[in-house]
Length: 171
Image (tube, rainbow, N blue to C red; front, side):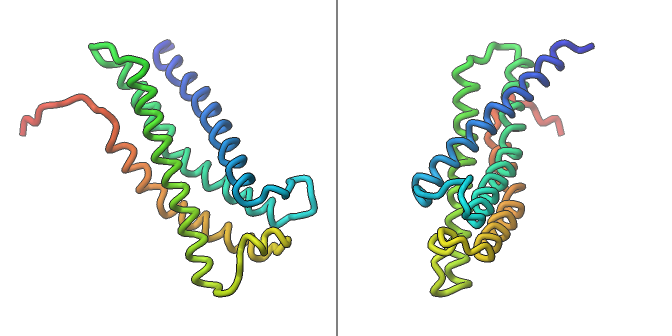
């Protein structure tokens, strides 16, 4: 058994769980605080539950593109001949998560802009508060579609920031 690989894999599992739980928790609290202060998941508003589920799924898709890059930074730090400080690893991880958060905000903003353009005169937040399930499903479908389209670009952006060691080009 390769103990270094096992330790790295275990670290990746723990990191994935901690990051996803923390990020989804914070995102849910921000969403609820900004838009739906009086709505509860245990209430009768199914539209709010559908909308919240779409946001969580979108964040999960974005995180699934960011966590491997964080793991690559950790993997690189264990294979370097010179020691890499924990603050460097945390700095890169924080930068990747910040980029993911900014991209998630941009995606959500573009979804609401697109929905507003497509359905002039419909206030999606008011409709979701009024338990309009069809609006919630349409907003979530647009959100997930844009997230799926953008996820590879997010992964490329994040991976371009990984501090790979310099190598010589012998060609």
